[in-house]
Structure formats: structure tokens, C-alpha cells
Length: 86
Image 1 (cartoon, rainbow, N blue to C red):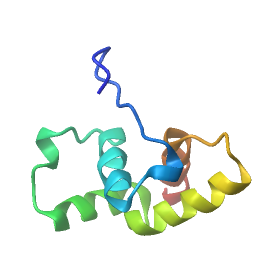
Image 2 (cartoon, rainbow, N blue to C red):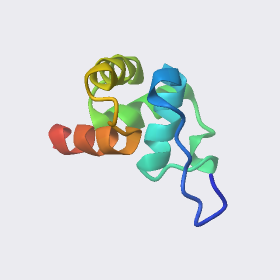
Image 3 (cartoon, rainbow, N blue to C red):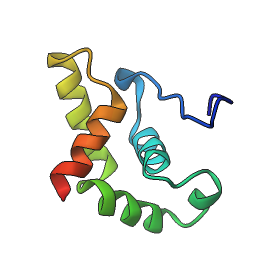
Image 4 (spheres, one colour):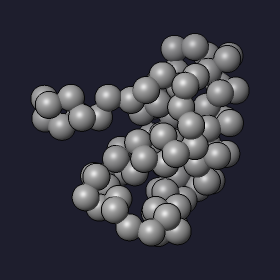
């Protein structure tokens, strides 16, 4: 978080791991640090409920999209994933 309204600071897409995608995806969905202190299976269920595929798949999609569209942001991609799932 950046200290200014608790906005998350996302790492570079090229450096993100599947765990980063899981963590920051859930932060973007409204699950802060306190609500992420649960078993991993529940975290995965929550992530897939909001975005569809599991974090490893999203990470691979992000890498592919980032190579073609270097200006893509994590937040925009996650909002698109959420919209497409609905």
C-alpha cells in the first residue's frame, strides 16, 4: 500500500509471480491483508470467483499480452478479466 488512501502499488507485470497475481488480484477485489490470512484453497476460490482462471493462467496471459502491448497495466487487465467473467 502507498500510504495515500491505501492504494496498492503493483509490481511490474514482467516480474510478477502467480502468488503476486493472487495477492494483488484479491487486493483489487477488496480482500486486504487481514482477509487474506486464510487457507490457500479459499484464496484460490475467491480469486477464481472474481476473475475466472487461476492465478498461474492469468500470469501467463499477462506475460503474453505485455509482450504485445507493453503499456498494459495490471489493474486494467484484472478489471477486464472480471468484466469478461460476468
